[in-house]
Structures are given as structure tokens and as C-alpha cells.
Length: 204
Image (cartoon, rainbow, N blue to C red):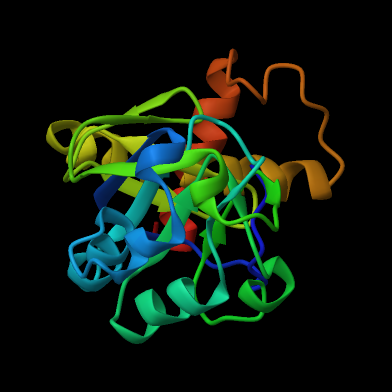
């Protein structure tokens, strides 16, 4: 999915708060539905906790927008950490300028009522074929967004730190002219010894 967000080099995270869409049915999806203050889409925007990430299951369809710049701006103003959908955004060019990470499939103009009905809040969903449970940890950067089961978050975080340190070492060696055979992955004892020395020198 693309990320209309330009905070270069930034990594962000938050717990998942979910919204599920289903195929729309004409008798249930007239514009009058938006007069209902408990309409699931509007209600989700007003109840997603600060610091959480709203993750939307839009059936991997960008034929209609999951949200537009007004709803996403409201989420930003409420302190939501990010927004992710496997559908599309309306006003994508405006959303790209917001100071909040947002990920979508592609821009889409039609209102969600055209093809989607917001039906469930904070239930297990699929977003871009990824299973997402409320409370899972959502992590994103300039490349992508991933979902980590909450009970595995600490284990994954520790492993990610270790891999980042090692890859920083590898990059320093490659910039110094080293080849990658035996270096990446570290299949030679000499590489592990050099890494241990480098890590001690770097205080990492």
C-alpha cells in the first residue's frame, strides 16, 4: 500500500482500533444514514482512542473512499496515531499534507456508501489480507505498515533492534568496500567477531 505521508525517516506505532466495511445494499446506504450519530464510520472517528491507529477493512476495494480529508483531519486532531485502509482515500492530496501517517491503496473519489457499508467497530478484520485484532501493534515507516500480534510485540521489538544494529554494521562495512559474501548473512566466524568488536566500539 502507498503511504501519503512525508515525514522522512520516521517510524511510528500504535495499537489497532478497527473498522470493518461490508458490501453495500441500496436500501441501507442512502445519504440519510449520515444523520445517525451512531453511524459506525462516524462513531469510529469519534471514539478511536488517542494514540491508537484506525485500521479499516475496506474489502481491498478502492472503488469508493474509506474516508476523506475531513474525517482523517478529525482523527489527527483527536490525537490518533495513524490511519490505515486497504481501500482508497478521497482528497488524498490533502491527506498527504497532514502531520499524521496515513496509508491507502490508491486515491478514490466516490463516497463509501457507493459500494461499502461500515458495519463493525473494533472487531477482528482483514486489511490487505493481513489479520488485524483490536489491540495489535501497528508499526509503519516510509516503506510500509505491518501488524504485530500484541502478545508477540516485545519479542519482535527486541529482535528488530538486534537486526537493525547488525544491518548498520553491515552497511558500514559495505560502504568501506567489503563484499557481501560471508558478511550478509553472517556465515563466517570472522564476520561475527568483527561485528562484536564494532558493536563494542559503537556502544551498541
